[in-house]
Image 1 (spheres, rainbow, N blue to C red):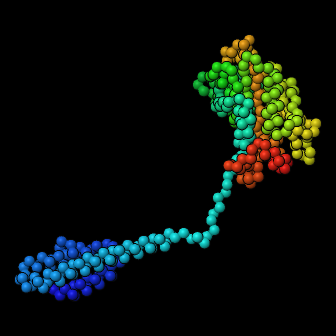
Image 2 (cartoon, protein in one colour):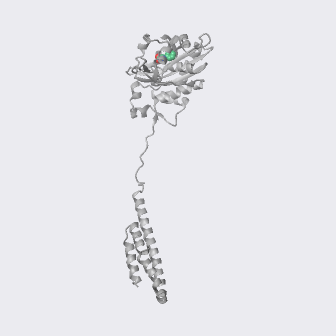
Image 3 (tube, rainbow, N blue to C red):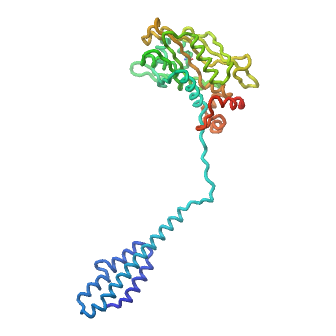
Length: 363
Ligand code: PHE
């Protein structure tokens, strides 16, 4: 029988030299596996005399146990080393200063849309929507602007190519088509606002090809121009946060309202800045009027029974006025510095009443 001590020394030496778990496992198989050297020795015990058995049996068992322990120890050691290596390489360097996240801000147009919506929903209006790619019928025809009507030229419309049947879709030139969609889809009475994007082929300091409007429509059996006037005055007071806001109705023309008016708001221009509610100057903020009987007939309402008013207001324009932003094109230039300056905090939006001081201060 082989010198067990020499065998043990050899194997333990191999084990401590094993650099990875795979090598350890190979040693285990070649020593203690089915055909391993130690296992074969165990098998030889059977052929031995009782005296030899007595001598080698306990020694072999001892060797087996020693080797099992040594193999497990080596495995644990290697596993621990691997884990430590991993932990070291993944260590968080707390001496590095953190990367600060830039807080985003609310775009002034979004802010205005929210404020306008809040003011009108408080008055009992609900919000309606319509598509920006609109059918000619809703954008023009149903609003009493037939083919060849000169008002079509006023709108600098973006047209889509004709479809097979000669119809051209348009990028809606105003939010008024939502009036038609509302009246065709629901039963009267109506009291809606429709904020959204609108498009005209026009570009200078106060016009961009895409801009925003909010439409309002109120139809019932007893609505008159006094209601229209009150609504607009109430809105202007709340939006501009000025009690004695001055409003002027200037006779005008829109095919879909009769009578029609444009609404100006009292202001003053000082050193190129606009101050709302002061001075003797006027700035146009919206178009409005009593919904034309023809429009009511187009949506199968009886003008003898129902009547009401509508107005359409440029949201970009009232945003410029409220915060003294001089160039409309800046709204859409996506300049982060501009947004940081004019944008609004996302979470901590000051309420309408507390913000007046900030606005006044920034003018
Ligand atoms: N749609 C008109 C425009 O864009 C505004 C308007 C709306 C006028 C509703 C009267 C009534 O110019």
